[in-house]
Length: 462
Image (cartoon, rainbow, N blue to C red; front, side, top):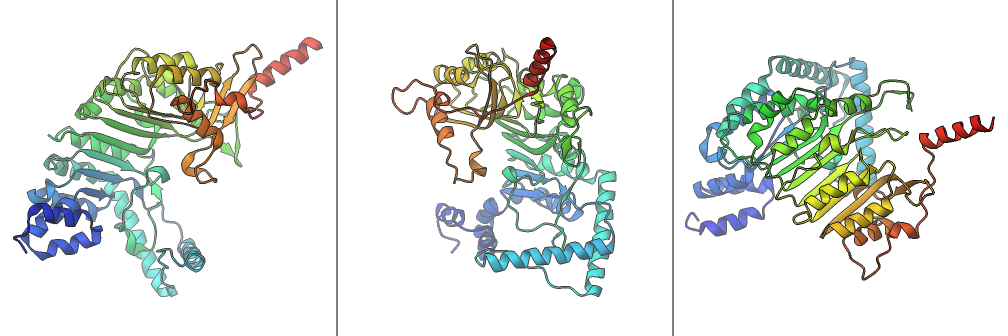
């Protein structure tokens, strides 16, 4: 069988599931070499000694190291402190109940039900769990991941993609096994601030690597990662000069009491907004002049339309990426006069635009969508989520449109208004030049500025 053409072996192996690739590699030397290209193309690492040792072993074998194209650092860890045995036992029994219910309701699912352990078995599992949590804490203190990545990554000369994933749904990576599987406990915690430790470990190691990294994906990444001086940020991102795609899901959260926002508190959004003023994110993006895809997403905004960042904190209005093909922005605010010149600057190359949960402040979506339609020649457009703005027709009425999010849409990804808006921006649908928003009523929305206006009117009447 070793006489089979190499192309045929690659064709066969490319159609196999990963578990079958491992079997394929056992058939002979040539099969092993071909299979390694598929079985080791993407490596996953947790903050766990076994995972890091495995990565080091791969990096020391040239035949395997050269196959690694993507390296993913999973930010999830075991939660610590461990909590009591009583809580561990209750959590375990609760998970068995949930898994049994899912298996009964959806027999076609691949849900595995945990074994119904005795008190003695649960005690032994809890002891092992406590030991692993302590090992994780020690690994974190000694920064063993920094050391291991610093040694391994320079040997992965064909590495093209680095991913930091905290398991957030839109960016969750599929992995069948974790080093925590035998603990009967899913890795559900994160080193705080989320993602910062892992991404910094990546970037520090890449400084010594000859690999040309094309893709960086980080989700979720706490905003504090960018709360640093410009010189340090430039040093960290200098190994990414060949980057063509960057995807950052920047996380923040609100101070809440019983689930209710406290407007008088200094929230995480306030701190994030202040940190973005330092220009680190903007400077980092400008330094990556080969970017073809830019995706910058901020997670939250408050009920009173307090957003994590403004457009000019993320982009310079005069900077041009000569190869930019796709732009995805979420959770930021700007007046349309801020983004339209940037779109104009990139109209020759930009073919894919996604805007989600955007506040146009005192400008209108009706006019802005016309700007997009008249400025760009788009192949794909996704204007979705909550859209905030204000009419520019003299009425000064607030705008609020809910176009929903395709992947979370309860109507199988169909939203007539969203579809019409995106077709309009892509100039699909014939010669109809009327903005679809004009055919729909905006959701009634009362913001703080309306309240302030009413208060002022009341005082004038008095």
